[in-house]
Image 1: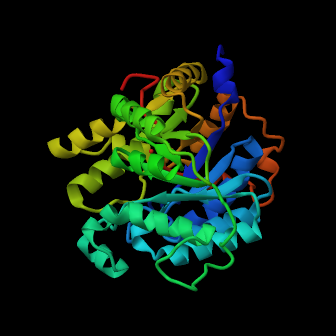
Image 2 (image 1 turned 90 degrees about the vertical axis):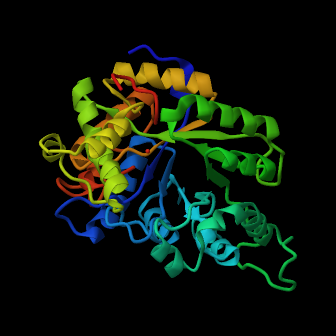
Length: 368
């Protein structure tokens, strides 16, 4: 397997969305996330992030800072964070306090990943106390949040965010398009995907680097590219790993509900409407999948073109054992230096830790 030194020196990280599986309890997905984090650490991945989704049947992760605390407590050295906390859903003071507690409990291991998405439906947004256009205030909310850490916020005199004030957990903005400009202005690290729109993503990265202003948080631009990567013994096996998520996305587009993941065989046998089939096929295009050699070549090209500082892998599928094998193979491709055997991690016996994973890279190593 021929790879460049750039691929072998680029950190690889994981975003796990605690995806639910057909026929299994939502609570199991959360426990599997914690166990999977132990395996990710053993394999040598750099970060392990969790996400925020509300009233989504297919995702159990609704309280990312709570879940991040459980992950950090169950691991030793892997960085732990959020991908991300959706700032429009929360008061910045409360977010600062939560991350202040996390950083105090697990010093030097916590990442604060922030997004600007709001609830999926009007009902969810009302329940969260936010509006559809709340994302437009993301820049101002971000400024306030950072001010709670520096002690420089002026909107609420004599109010302090303890224990956050004075701490500096790394801050990442999850962004596409205009979000990249917000990250550049604030001098924060950028997480960007999905790579199916490769040229658009590269333009946003160029804009981010050109507009970046050094800050107390970061002296130079830092780009994390994110998305799906599936690796298996054959390209077809790798592609099958992507089917459950592609169908879940197609179903959400046509039914308004994002469902639990279903087995690949069930999806292959499913009769789809023309509209469903269109969304399903689009969901498979541009994904990065294949054998170890094929994925190594595609990742090499991706890192070279984007000049990425890090890759965040977000793959989901129904078969957790096959997905864990994909992450093992990817760790080999990336030359990760894990020094623990994943199967020896406490709580990782057969059918246990090997059942945890989830979630969005672009350019296909094969076919799409």
